[in-house]
Image (cartoon, rainbow, N blue to C red):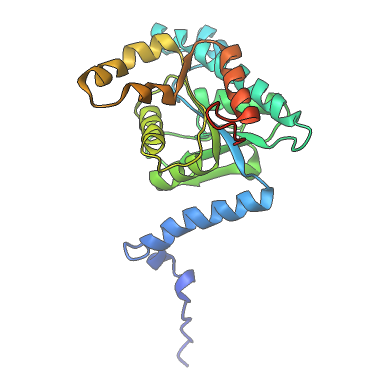
Length: 260
């Protein structure tokens, strides 16, 4: 007797879902599943921190087994600054009387600066999110991300959508191509008014950013306006970054007074 052949439903057909024709469904899944989880967990506002996955902690930099360059070891000061700033922002958020824990620290879920930010939040006793990306040569998970807020994306643009959509403040620590990509896409959205909310954007680490780019040159050549430099705030101080962000989140942008 010929055995019965099981007919699979389309949404159970993994070969189809992984095919070129199934790409639109995969993209939609990276929108719908995070949305459902964020809503279920009551997460609607984040403070996003970008930065290099390669920057070591102070402990790692001082370890005899650390094989990183001396320049990279010196960058550990940014790891510790990210950790402290994240901890302080998380403590402030958890202390809000009307909505404790409203602002959740969110990173790319990887090592380095991302780990530092998630670590600081966890040290404050707060939950913290990590939006990882699948890459062929890197492991992007750090154990400081809250388990229920750990995500892995395939598509960079869907990952960046969730970074931007929930963000009420952004901190760009020293980083590489990924950090620059995320930063400049965000600045473009704000500059072109495609993103209506006016969020505080902090570039942390003047020495690093001064070497990486000179935006005043773009002003001089007329490719951006002088007021575009006001889209972000630059500092080396954890205190100043903390005050700048919390003031905006409490009182809103000075020009509107609206609470974000």
